Length: 389
Ligand SMILES: NC(=O)c1ccc[n+]([C@@H]2O[C@H](COP(=O)([O-])OP(=O)(O)OC[C@H]3O[C@@H](n4cnc5c(N)ncnc54)[C@H](OP(=O)(O)O)[C@@H]3O)[C@@H](O)[C@H]2O)c1
Image (cartoon, rainbow, N blue to C red; front, side, top):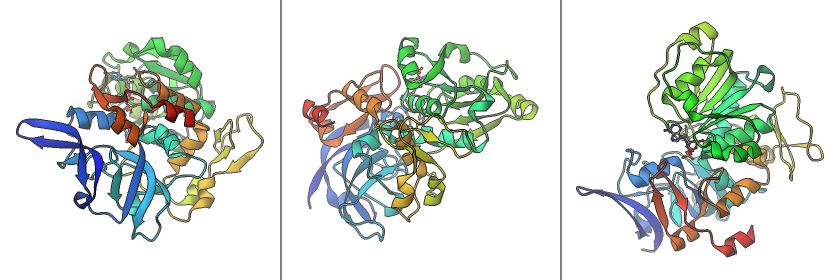
């Protein structure tokens, strides 16, 4: 049986081992579509899985990688044919189903989203699961009626993958964004993404009062624990906070005061099993074309157009099948993705997301960076690859 290269996590009595290996195609799991993977992302959860810092992987051996973009190689699914360009994120890949850090993946066709023609596979993975989740969080705030008119919004863990995309998206939507970070040296980077104000992480890590001074109309929290408790206690009357992550802890030492005395809503955001939606839903959103793409909401006064006119979301016209509009929204909102792409060439601290080209990854190797958050970084991006951008 043919083999392909994959990063495989194995577990034995001696503990967890991760290696780059030749994986037998016969050992791929059940699925009706086989994809030749081109790009994947280095996500927080991938870091946890590979370093073994949290029990993310629930089947061994496991191919890591919770998302990928690539081309359909074979399919018995009615919606997909060889040559189709696709994206996948979540659905248990890299956790319970063999994931994307491999030259091939076999998955359910129902999990796949068509790669919008204007996006490259690399661009899609520069957004990655974190960017997709950031967009889900923004949409959740909108569903709860939080608009730029209501006041500023806070993003915690703002320099991280999810946080930085959230800052960029909210700023493009016209919100005054307060970015909370433990890395104040990255203030200029956050301002370049559109943050209006930077506050230090330590302001939000102490024990939260039941009700604090009302500082923001809403928030996107990637940190959890006391940080989320403080964000809630400082949210204005009727505001909403989207909880996305646990970089600071899984607990939530809060009181019910913000909910029952200020009508604040706490919204959970999940990207893994987030259901597919009908294209019409995506069509509610419009975006300006490149080069300065900008997302607007039909109920908001649109920001000044940066290019000629607005056009309907391409994805809505493109496919009759259900899909996850947040991906396309994020792609369009971030426009030509200059920042993520240049971030790829300079991987370490400043990045929206670290996209990685599967072949490069295998050629240059990888390392686990356990010194800060348990995430992985590409050591190097080949110069030929940079030239192609
Ligand atoms: N709900 C979902 O479906 C979903 C999807 C993707 C990710 N997530 C979760 O979202 C979180 C962020 O993911 P990511 O991809 O953005 O990770 P990331 O790129 O590693 O960023 C995490 C950020 O969190 C902040 N941080 C780290 N440790 C902290 C601590 N002890 N206290 C306070 N802040 C801390 C840092 O921000 P600063 O440098 O700015 O301080 C860091 O950059 C993770 O918990 C991840 O599991 C959830």
